[in-house]
Length: 314
Image (cartoon, rainbow, N blue to C red; front, top):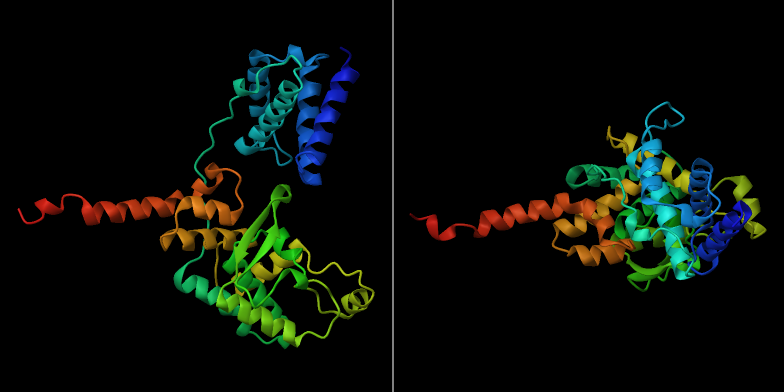
């Protein structure tokens, strides 16, 4: 088998990811990068040459690499290479092409993630920040609606930025969003989010089809031509960071922190982790388990309330 044939198999796999699995263009590009890196390092002609020893040596090589800042590659970055290789091997197994069994590849153990989230007074100060500063009313309403929607729904920033007015029915408490891997899920709007979205939409005079848009003259011309693109994810990130600073919050706040806050709020108020997994659109419960700091807290409360109660009066 020539090296070009191996590359052909890799391209077939990438096409399969895009067409059959519906993976995003960026995801496919990342898989291509990781596989190419492995193929160049391994210098092999046949997937049957991939062995456990080869993968082990590749992991050692990755562990000794530096990023663009001269620091060792993060464990999750190393794992992305192995995840791409494992997915390629699964594809080969599906086609009965001889190669290392994908389950032979183990990922590096990840350190526990420390997640940031807002709660209590800090959260309330942040959510009300757009109302406290001197700026055009339309900007206040838009930004307030953005913050309330992020906290109400737990949307990813890209999901929020792509929302169109037609996607939302304010007579209902829910709507469907297309998330990672083009998967559909239902998200819910709080009364606060509905209230501020309605106030924002009622105040708009532009023709933009997007739920959240720019309000400068250049965008007005684009919206009149029906070719506007709404707010970009980066613009939403800047808006969130702006109000975190106004609220006096010193830790780094991003739209994803609001997603964490959404999940934390649900769990601390009694939601089960499987339901939160579904509402966040996580394909694996493992991803949702980064919120175990909340379930651990609840376990402590259960322990205090119920353990050794009969001994209390002794």
